[in-house]
Image (tube, rainbow, N blue to C red; front, top):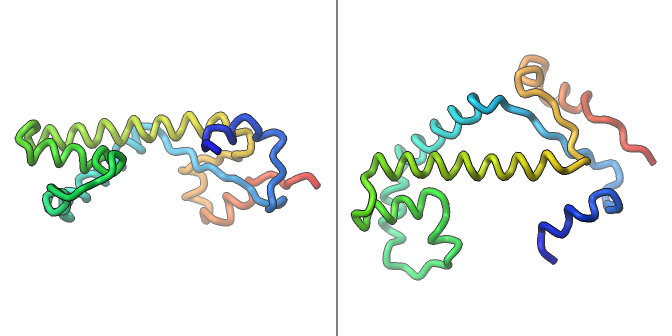
Length: 137
């Protein structure tokens, strides 16, 4: 069964975990984009290029070869992109991936959203748990 098929039955889905809450933490887009950029920079600083170089020439699945970061490093190693272009493309692809995830979860009626700023200032786990609506039996 395809993962996307689950979306069609959210309203009628009987979970084996009847008290399970799905909680989403909403982060402002500009904050999220800054975090993505910092994460990509950290990946570069911690050896993404060396890791991609070590994988070069190995037989990878199409999915692995196209993975965000690895595809760009492969293009850099092949001389198609500069390192800065690879970095920028990795950031853009990660932002797009994040946007797709956000759209997916926005359509899921089971998700109870809480604001990241509010949650962070109010003992996050407890605040988020308090925001979760009780599940009706």
